[in-house]
Length: 423
Ligand SMILES: Cc1cc2nc3c(=O)[nH]c(=O)nc-3n(C[C@H](O)[C@H](O)[C@H](O)COP(=O)(O)OP(=O)(O)OC[C@H]3O[C@@H](n4cnc5c(N)ncnc54)[C@H](O)[C@@H]3O)c2cc1C
Image: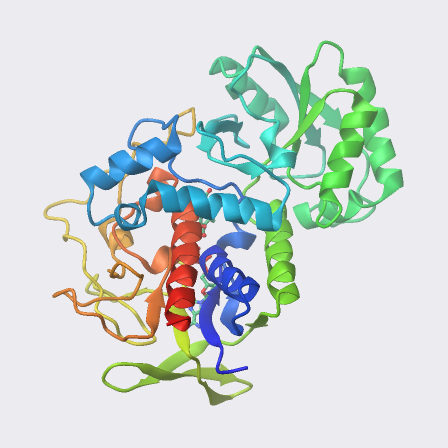
């Protein structure tokens, strides 16, 4: 086999790109400093949630957004590619409900509602699209989820017909009461049976029961099905603040899929720089055990994330730069006068009114096949591509578009590399 495609970054964008390439028989090597936002964010496939009003039909809204914002990553990708990418992902990884034409509307841990195009089957049953009487489970030692508060806000927001908090005091068997500990406990039959026994007398009149998203890792779908059977109501998981147990679950699944297709993943391999000639990237410099080594590839995919992941860095002057190749980064307009006053979060969890910090909009601009370009639209390096949160312009945390952009750009760049490898 020839030199691999080197993907830098193991977040959703890099892993999507790498997995699609490996499935098509290309040699792929993923180099990453650490895991990406998969371990922090729920694995909800958010295409578009707010523009700024809540979006009902995400793919139709992608086309509208593209027409209004030609520099947005979705304008280049188009709704059809976004849809194909999600279909590919949900089929490849398995265990998802959606995408349909409408967004699901899922309860948040504080009783809000958030739209998403597709969700793991263990979470999708929380869809608030139909009136129901819902019970929310409080695992007494778990600090990240207060069922009483969430139930109260859901009911007051009219998002459910009725909401109640259900208490579970089954002990964790030690001082560790973290979501990771509960995920471990939900692999144990004895613990599950004790939880079911505590819940049964509290279920009268309820249609569905929401658990904090700690139902385990590899066995979560079985645990979820077992809880539904034992309780006789629909069961769903509600996403918690980081770390994300279901996020880790799907990260593991995606990496297993990539490895099964022959791809290699090296976590703990930060890329410090690159050797280039005028037209191409020749190799990247990887820091390993105190000394650097050069890794050569046939093509390179920058999937290093945005400012939060270190894929982009902001200087004291507010300018944003790309640290591996010093690629040109279009800067967002600098605020004149005072920064916007932060708004309090809306009770429905609506992000549409949150202020935009301009530097979070900075990021790479790319050509039609996903290669970074300079201010004049010239391709920086013939064999270098960029995907995911390294791309600029999208206010992804506000639009709820980060996962859609990561998936669709990773999928599209894999296609670009495959078709060029066949030429
Ligand atoms: C807490 C949190 C919650 C979020 N919630 C949502 C949500 O609900 N919905 C949504 O749509 N989006 C959400 N997002 C945003 C979304 O997760 C991202 O937009 C998207 O996942 C970005 O994926 P990515 O692969 O581009 O980057 P990331 O997932 O950030 O991955 C970047 C990867 O690059 C690696 N890396 C960086 N620099 C180097 C280097 N020099 N060498 C080697 N590797 C490097 C990192 O280690 C990591 O593996 C959230 C983000 C966070 C942080």
